[in-house]
Image (cartoon, rainbow, N blue to C red):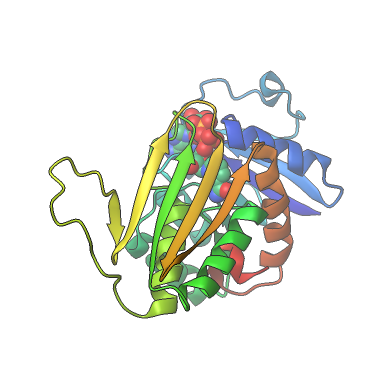
Length: 257
Ligand SMILES: NC(=O)c1ccc[n+]([C@@H]2O[C@H](COP(=O)([O-])OP(=O)(O)OC[C@H]3O[C@@H](n4cnc5c(N)ncnc54)[C@H](O)[C@@H]3O)[C@@H](O)[C@H]2O)c1
């Protein structure tokens, strides 16, 4: 049995992770963590009475293999560091960490030969989109990204959009050319080594992304759409099984599929 702690267990994604773990025949939910909750009775959350609920990081004392994190951008670094320091393999979905923070966590986990994953997107369609974008980037010198998320998403751009821009930049090996030097209203979006990122926040969306490549007399659009957040759990489950075999922290689901 793979023993799992879910950080942010009472949130929207946390609840989906709880369902995924409870439905899996080789996983066991041993604890839920959220510093915001006051009630530590697992049955109040519809959980088995043997599941322990914690609202203080330092009080977590259960034996666990996996730390799933769907919490908040300001907490995920400390949560992940705690998991690594306690030998619990991190499976991190929370967005908002900087490249420096991710690199520091990788160094920590790798030094302990601890498997783990930080993935800005556990959706298979998004990960495949990133792979296809990386291939297209070798043939098209210019591209822009449009990402569309629900109105409650705190951070922008999305981790997936930033990761896509990073992969495009790595494939090209140089910054993209800039256009429209006159833009007093800042309508050209964010910028990652010249790749523009446009973030929409509107009700009705879950998580969508388009990467549009422009060439001489042609364009190529790679587009993915998430219609139900349960889809992310396919990737989380796959990642859990994979990190149990790994001895290092991988960044991005695309590294293991
Ligand atoms: N990687 C992916 O595939 C993927 C998919 C969807 C969402 N996300 C990300 O997951 C995160 C959570 O999204 P959500 O929609 O479930 O948000 P949510 O607001 O519904 O849930 C977050 C939960 O974390 C709790 N929390 C607050 N502080 C915490 C802390 N210090 N430690 C642990 N928990 C804490 C909150 O009380 C809340 O219950 C966001 O960063 C979101 O962008 C990632």
